[in-house]
Length: 262
Image (cartoon, rainbow, N blue to C red; front, side, top):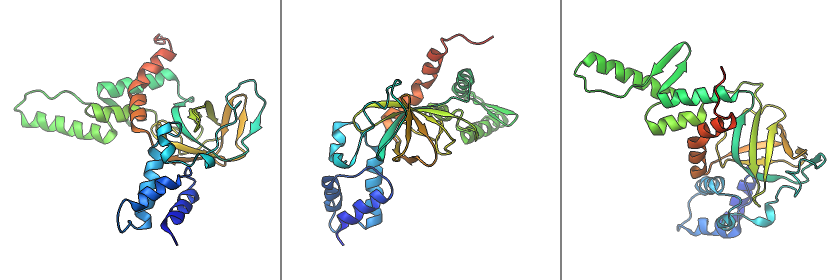
């Protein structure tokens, strides 16, 4: 059996966005002899999950005839409740835990920025290294640094990652709100009607692809997510995720007006 039909069938069986024939042909012909099917599948999956569904540059990767968009009135708050007639692939532009007060989220992010992180009843502080010839003091600093790195803190890159995941421990009764975008660039809010374990701050990445199955309810401009109708697929758009993580504290401060509760 030809590799291209096998590859297409495997990708579609994994609920991924439909790839274009040109993309698969280029992938298979890039090496002679071509790599084995599992290797081709992994490469194609990574490329599809990292692309921007709404960008013209992704047209070479995707088959637009097999990539339906959300209904035109999906984001209309005045529209009556309806159900998606077809499966629709979307990408995540934002995620927020509505069950956690914004000030709590701000305090978590500020703690990460200061180099502090709660672990049980222990608070680990990461201090800047100073010139110190005392081996004992150096050992204490190294141990604190290692413990903090284990918790996700550390130098700026690690702290940014920890900041993105602050509040990631969402419980079984948490409710998340997402901003989703379809292949035509249309945006819509989505809310968990029932908890989906793979959705959460620190779990869901920006640019991650999701499949909204046929029958997904859209009510008053909001997509209602349930485990039966929403399938997170993974992936991310790296530049989007970094910008989102770096700007999250500022967005939260703007949302609360910058006034701390007394």
